[in-house]
Image (tube, rainbow, N blue to C red; front, side, top):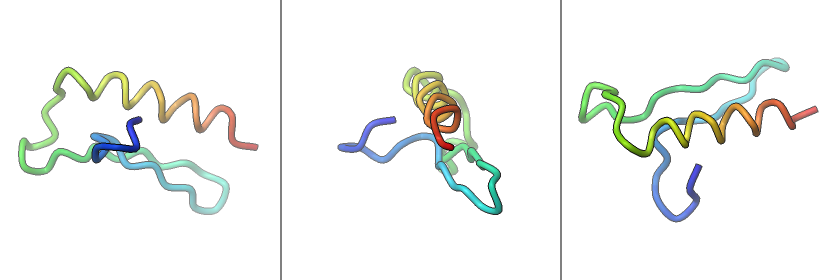
Length: 50
């Protein structure tokens, strides 16, 4: 996920669970060229989170 631009995936932790939410409501959450990388980064972050 990129810090300098708004990510296409939101990352949130609640009650020891990670929630990934697609964040392109203006495009009905259609997958663009950045989203697969943002999803992969969010999954890596979740895997590294104790």
